[in-house]
Length: 220
Image (cartoon, rainbow, N blue to C red; front, side, top):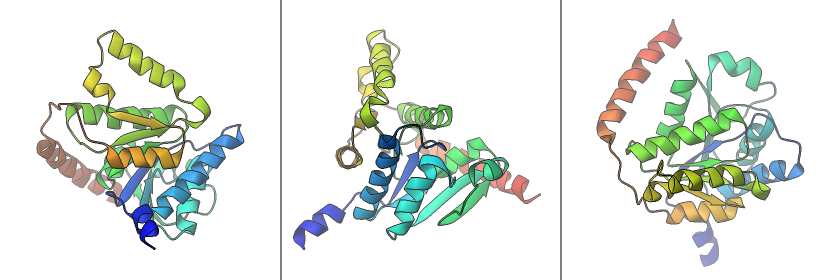
């Protein structure tokens, strides 16, 4: 019983997952999504994600829901027909646009994890990394490097450090591991080691004001 308590304990309550609305061409990507869902359930972590029911998004959300975890999907109204083509699970929160989607996902989450994906996944991942770089948040950010999928991205980041575009301390913002279990453990142990330049409280106040105005737009 004591071992189970250790496994299920976590510093987080909700994890934001970025991933593809496609499942990819290789089974390892599907397996990784299912493994991540199981890992979140084993640690009693709730899921925040982009709200789709297809591809890796559908797989991880269904796995968490099946295991008894709470699932919150946040999706722009314009994408609902495109990304929700099957049965959704958990709660779905429609928002006005992509900007509000990312802001809401961040607001509801304690850390971020990226599975394999395309342009959208990269854009979401890089934005939360940039927010951390600026000091907007200090939440851990990680990616599951499934079978070397993100090797070239990690090599690019190292090149940017070598050439002086990213500070060495800021390179440590992003954590990577080949499996969900290894990555979540690294995120649990993560300690911010970089200096931000934007006042977090001011940014959060601006986001609240922006979200209020966007909610009015949605209601029209």
